[in-house]
Image 1: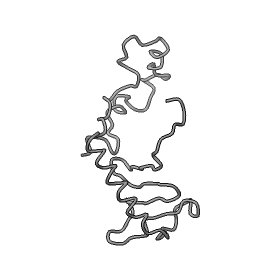
Image 2: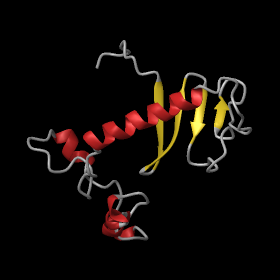
Image 3: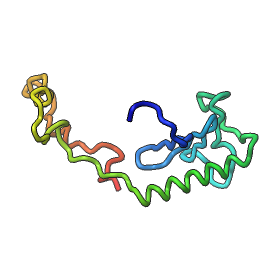
Image 4: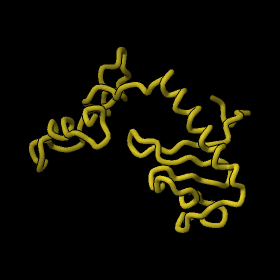
Length: 136
C-alpha cells in the first residue's frame, strides 16, 4: 500500500478482454494469443533485443517454455479459486455513495446542456462495451 514492496512475483499476465493473451517474465514474453498450435518458438519474444515484438523467436533456453506453462497453470488454478468480480452496475460513476461530500456530488453534474447533445446520455450508459459479462 505504501509503494514498492518485496513481492516475489516477477511476472505479469496480460489479458485481451477475458482471454489470457500473454505473460512476461524477466526479459521474455510468451504470446499465447498469436501462437500457432503444435509449433513452439514463434510465440516467444526477447523484449530487450526486440522491444516492438516484431520477430518471434525460439529462445536459447528451451526450458523457459515449461516455466511459462507452469506459470499459466498456477494462474488458472488461482483464477478458479478466486474468480474475478462481476462488473459494477451500470450508470454514472460515484453515485449511490452514502454521506457523499459536496465535491463528489458536483462531479455527477454534466458540464453540458443535455438537450444540446447529439445523443441521448441514457444510450451511452446502456451501450454494451466489448468483453463485458453479457458477451458470454
